[in-house]
Structure formats: C-alpha cells, structure tokens
Image 1 (spheres, helix red, strand yellow):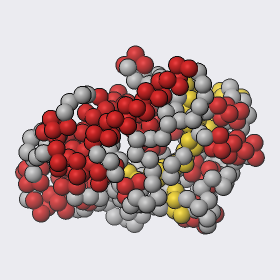
Image 2 (cartoon, rainbow, N blue to C red; image 1 turned 60 degrees about the horizontal axis):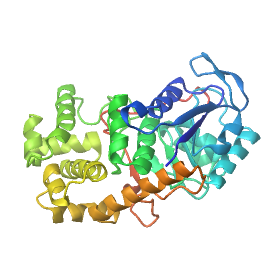
Image 3 (spheres, rainbow, N blue to C red; image 1 turned 30 degrees about the vertical axis):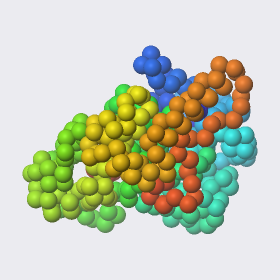
Image 4 (tube, rainbow, N blue to C red; image 1 turned 45 degrees about the horizontal axis):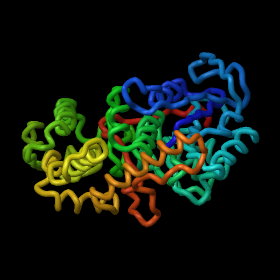
Length: 374
C-alpha cells in the first residue's frame, strides 16, 4: 500500500492534471482515510510554467522519487514530449526499487521514452495513440480503454481519465471502501474494476454523443445510473431500469450500450459485486446477508460471480484483505521498509483483457487536446 506519492511535472504540465491528482491523494485522515504524502517534482527545482501560462514553484527535483511508493508522470498541454536523462533514470530506478509507476494522457508518451512500457500494453489520449504507436513500436497501444493495469506500471487515457486511474490504484491497494469514499469526498463517480470500451466523441463532424443525440434520453439514463446503486437490495430487472428511464427495454438496452459499452445486466451485476466487496472489507456480516443486501438471490450466486471476477471466493477475499491490511500496519509500526504486500487480486497475464482494464460511465467523455504540431 503506497503512502508516499510523487507526481512528476514537466514544463507545460496540465494544470488540471496537477489539481486532480493532488486532490485524490489529499490528506483525509480526519475522515478515517489513509494519509498520503504528496509531492510534486520537476526536472529541477524552481519555477515551472503550466499549460495555462501560470507559474508554479516546485521545490523538488527527480531525487524526490528516490523513496516514493507511487510515481505519477503528469500530462503536458504544451512543450516537448521527451524526458531529460536525469528524470528517465529516476523513474527507472524507482521502478526497479519496487515503486508503482503510472502515467496518463501525454504523460504516457513521456514514460514510454524510459523503456518501461516496452513489451507492455498501454493507453493514452485517443488523439495521441498514433504518436505513441509510431514512436514506440515495442509498446502495445490499446486505444479503447480508460486505463491499463500492468502490475507496477499503469497507464491512463485523457486528462480526466487520470482520476479513474488514481481511483483504480486506490481500489487495488486499499480496497473498494477507501476508493469509493475518496471518490465521494472528491465529488467524482466511483467505479468498479470492470473493463469497458471508453466513449469518445467521433472525430468526424457528428454530434459528440453516441446514439441519436437525444439529450433528454441521456439525462434519464444518467439518472438511472445514479440511482441504481442505492437500490441494489431490490429485485431489479433490466425491464425495471428501462421503465425508470421511460424507454422500451429494447431502446434502453441499445442506448445503455452506446453510453457505457456494456449491457444493463452486466453493469447491474458489476454494481452488486462492487458493493459486496465494500461490505466484505468493512463489515463482519455473514456472506449470505451480504448477498441479500446487494441483490443476489443466494450466497452461491454471489460466490460464482465473485470467483469469475477475482478468482477467489468472497470468504477468502475478506480474509486476504484483512491479512494484508494487518501486514501493512505491522510494517508501518515497526518502521521497516520491507516489500509491499501483493494486492488482494493481483494482475494476472492469463486474465482476460477486460478484467484488467476499466472505465467510468462514458456519459462523461474524456479528452486532452494536444498542442498544435504535436
């Protein structure tokens, strides 16, 4: 579980990127959430200009990565897409020491220059996927996801997708309850770990919405997506969701897939599993009661879905999560650096592509616009 988070900012860094990442890893210990040490570093300490032309004072150089548990390469909205040698060495050294290294949007291209993405899958903003693929042929570029988890290397898509990526890292390391609590406190939508194709505006002159541009329909669909997690214990069917959206089941299913990249039934199952994870992490409720509270007909049904998602049973998930948390507490109490315990559900190359990637509701498209000539 990471505590020390260092964000690297190149000249022309995205102002939104700095704000979003620092907001996710803010100190919320007064709410009973993990306290993070968050630092911004640059190629050299001193004044740094952002993409908005504002200047920020950065106190640390690449040496700040030396003891970081998580290093995030922030995107740039202007400037060169190549790191200096001292920064590249610091990133590679942090990875070899055991830190998690992440990047998103144009930050993914900066990270690719270190060689850490060679032989891995990665993603970036959809406008930059060609640049990444052409410049770094050893990287397998996935343009259809909001982020890709390759274990200790994680990459994300557009600037706003950095929030999804950071929430995923919180979820992976600290569990669903912590990730959802930070999302709610940050006023962003919490997400599960299911993989979906992301929604982006069509590059052509079409309207920027998938589907037929029915803003009212999109609004009703968004309301259904927002209200359903609070009604999971009800015996909801896809027909119920369609009725709430004032659509026929067929129209609802089509519009739902256009907006989220998945089916209503699959999405509803994921919402139930997300809530089950949170209850397993934070309560001592019996598995049968958790299954009832999240809307599954029995604990056997919950177990079947849970094993498909994680490869382990709900009971073992709870036990492993608690053992891991206790190990981290013991390491922090003793003051020994020691290795970080593995996540409850470690990324596994044998798992399907979708089980290793995720996205938030595509009703909120994400994009960062590269500067001219990039």
